[in-house]
Length: 456
Figure 1 (tube, helix red, strand yellow):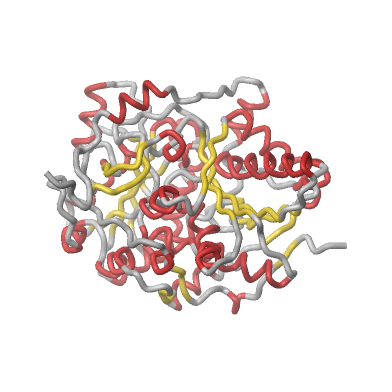
Figure 2 (spheres, rainbow, N blue to C red):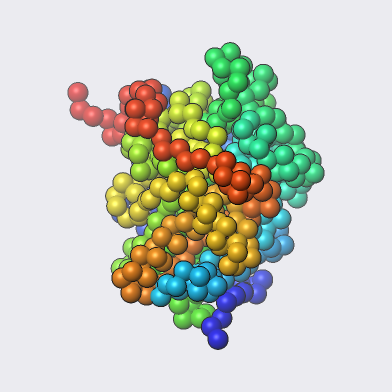
């Protein structure tokens, strides 16, 4: 009988994070100020500590993980790699399907892989307070846990639609001592402006980021922590793919394709980037980011410089974007409701090194239910996107007879998302394929800058 679960010992937790910048064909494009000039690192010190900024700008292939961080990691890492043999049987596919299960972390998702080092580095730099945003609540929960580990106060602006849809995520954050506010609020200029335009504003990640950044920039004891998009966040998540490579090697396996949900990019980067190092060395492996059709930044957006938030507080980043004014529908995969994509993921997609697909909401929940019935784990709505794409590929292989090895990141459990499953099971969940006209409208507000500057 084939092995269905591959574990590692605690002493096999990686000692370094992998920095994909070292293996990219072209260096990353710089973040820009509104005047079109690159942002100097010192300009970012208003909201980030210097040690994290060093990681953000680094081109070193390996970044050491502090022993104090590895010690907290050991609460739940290494995470298991599992073979979805029952799902294979249900599908009748010749494919082997493996998944890396990140739902065993204290917060129930992969987000804790970066919240812990971010809290650690801020504590080392002397900061006592962190602000952040959260969509589905997984990032907010992860940072609340990390803040408690290092004695840092955490204040969270939670997208209002998710605040209402996911009360138990909110309770998790509060249990770990965080203050949670439904965004938009009347506590910031960005929130007040949004409410003045639309008192019933459901919120967005871009707007919640504006509120969190505004508060952090206004206080000397406070920094901002981000759960996705930026280079250092993606760096911390590569512990996932490194462990997965080691685990697959132990049983003599290697994936033909790697899948992960893709909102801001940290989940995808975590599982896929360590395999990109192999791809850069000539190994054949396909890396596929999976996004919702209702928020299709890579598959329907444009590759351009844009703000990471609604109010323009962040630097301009070259990314696939639907426009920072984009207001996504209230889909239940709240962690994927972001208008843009990580600059690193975007550049790799633009250079055709990685791939992207978009899947509809109802089909993703159907995939999640099928997976839960077969494997017993109820996945988070975000994770269902990766599962949907894996099932689709496995069924294609069933038609062609091709026997591929497929790997995906099961980024978190869905125990606090059962209201979403209720809506699916009662037939109330709907698809929303974002119309091109609405995307075009949101893109009208793109800043008119590029790098290198176009000749006059």
